[in-house]
Image (cartoon, rainbow, N blue to C red; front, top):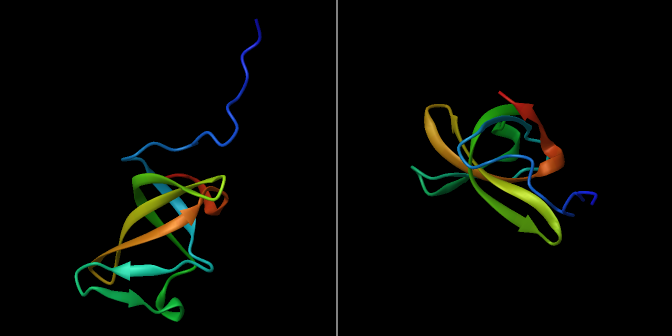
Length: 85
């Protein structure tokens, strides 16, 4: 019997730290309850996977990260993640 790879399986687990591109990402500063302007975000960041979600049929992740000392959240598609930190 041959094992098959489940379509849309997640590559990362909750709690893992990942390196991700921040291009075209909407981020929220949860301490200020305010969006982080895209122009203020770095090109990439290291974040911790808080949750695994879906965007349509594709895997995506809610990431926690720090930006200028504030706790922030964003949702990124799996293909925006470059790997584990």
